[in-house]
Image (cartoon, rainbow, N blue to C red; front, side, top):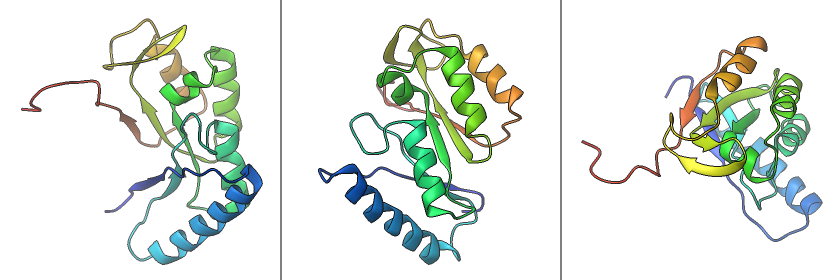
Length: 154
């Protein structure tokens, strides 16, 4: 799968420092094992309640792993779910992670709440996010979550 991005979601009850060290070693090992299979990279999946909950957590991991193909994911819903709904904070975070940003995941949402909707629904105007990504010259992949859509995919 050329130019693919592997996302990781690690759960665990260990302390952040113990868990972080364990997962940094895991990611380093995975990257070593996958060099012949994946030409993209690894971006830990940020998820509320996990040790990779914020963009700052993602950056800390990417810097600690110190591999060119390990970077940062922005998942808009999970960024909002931890209370980060301010557009200037979003701009600041994305500018700070520019060199590490590997994938952006969006879905419809509301500007004042972390809601899960279909892209195009909700009060959050994606134009703001697209403008920020354009301003930082992001050219990587973007994905969307579709689990809110029900029924036959055909």
